[in-house]
Image 1 (cartoon, rainbow, N blue to C red):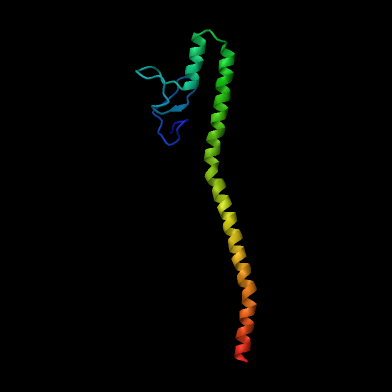
Image 2 (cartoon, rainbow, N blue to C red):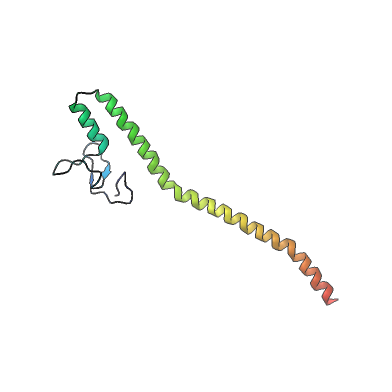
Length: 116
């Protein structure tokens, strides 16, 4: 499993609150504390500070949705590039075939006139 924030890094733990995969850099619960991600850490700090928990939770959910969209985009991007490459290649091959077909009759006429 890879880190949710750094897909190139292997996750060393998961957040004890939301189960998000975390690498060592993203784990804010260092020193034997439970592993915790930055948004959940902010929630805990907000709770400790006596702030409205619903507001902090809403911000966390919004952050999670943004990260999910970024993650999904990263997953489908290689496929989009592949599709575009196949389309461009198909157009190029079609153009080459079209050029060969349009050149071929002239070559055939020259060959026929040389034979006669």
